[in-house]
Length: 385
Image (cartoon, rainbow, N blue to C red; front, side, top):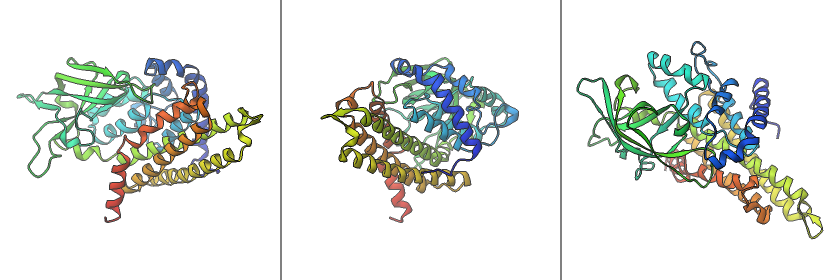
């Protein structure tokens, strides 16, 4: 299918990214997976491409207003090569929009130039042991000092992506008790430098997939956070957290479809050279039918993604439509990649083959950003059910 969602400038950026990944990522990716993280300087190299300055004002070192499609291209090209670029999409795609939308002018002057240059990467700490998707149940506290100069932060977080390679962490903490009729009241967003005293790393979690992107436990013990690091208004944090979810869920769908496309490419290349009973696996009718069905499924998912990219560009991507896109694309990706692994036979189970990595990496897409079950709930509510 010839895609029409990208313009000439964006396709030129794709070629630049493809060259960058072939030179700076693919040759080193195996060692990065063993290390459990990408090297910190990968992000300064991405900054040289302009990839960390999207939407940051030009006077602060960024590229100014930028289509999300450029970030989508980075995801597609990394998955095309069956590699990863760490927590880039978390920092620039998920956390940066909070700063762009909520930060004061003084905060923007303080933080955005470093982000644009790649010197400052971002992570976000929401999930806690035992809370999962129930953010209203957050127990991490931030008590404002009597003189109003700083917050005292205490608590623990888990499943935090990219903290080891970040300089700033947006922490969701309870600054006031919940009210009787609103459990969500009282949460606030605090921007905390990683090197602040009392900010500690717990276990580096050993994940099934995405093994070149670090995921950690964090703890805060009497961490002093300057009051001027409050992002947005105190106690209104929960309302902010949902504002970027449609884009985040679209981004997950972009990743899911590009992983599935990569799986089909790897499976086709494998069956065309693998011989069984004196002939290549590609010549068997079952192989042709399986790949044809996978190709058709992914085409349908790609059309949904491109529809989502167009809606996002127009500013009309709704929570319900983003849920539909994420649900369909992540479920399709899991099914397609499983079938492509099957065509590899026993070799598909070996981690030296990219299909095994893709199989492991795609599984979490049906969980993070809202589980498939949560997506169905959102869609059903939109249907009036």
